[in-house]
Image (tube, rainbow, N blue to C red; front, side, top):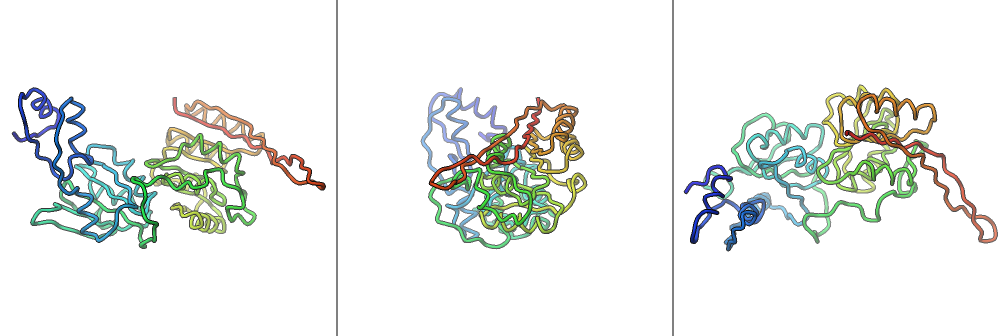
Length: 351
């Protein structure tokens, strides 16, 4: 019986009395049919073949214990692409409408190389290495496996867990001395920690850091597994962002330009952090409708304006005045509390 659409085929299997054999490509327990069978209450003995992901990395001559593996087959392409944007080594299981061309198109602006593996295991198997732009410009067989790799081969530690956890060793809300900021405005650790809680960065999400300064929020979001775009108008600060990202092993795409104009054409974010630009930038970002917007505002007058801009775009706005005092030494092994500048942290969420 040719299965055809999965739903009716599973119904036939569930109604069958006696034994049945299901033939599926790849490893049926790895993004395969085993989960669907068990959800129907069907017990099964699995005789696996080599998974298409294992074959793809074998053809590429690459280890994959340090890779992320995602599926866009019958799933949302956006999340898979965001993992490709964030991670140096990703395998994507593709499907109709979410193939190598669509992956290549979505990776415009990120330095990646692709290895497209078509008809793995067949006599006419085809392995093609190309740029995202080249992948976007041609047609491919469905389904396929796309390996998305950093443009320059990166040294990586031996994998110890799969999928690899987000790179957040040491936690988040890093101390200021963990960053090179050379006179740039830097978001203090206490503010950053609360902002990260509101932004909720993680694998599969895309975060904008607008008015990024030295890129502290951008780098921390990337360390938690998110894809990140940092927008900054000052060339010197753009260099700081790149150096801080390199220092922490984070992949941050830097866009040099002044918001809101510099935001045109960028892929829409799941959340945006606004470190500068005031109400005009808040209104421009809100018009795009990301689920969450977090704005750090130092000036009392601007806090109300940014809140009004978000509320006017239909966001439910919450906020807090973040005031932190840190221990500072005094003579005689005593300490005092040294206050940092207070910051309004406004959070807009789509109802």
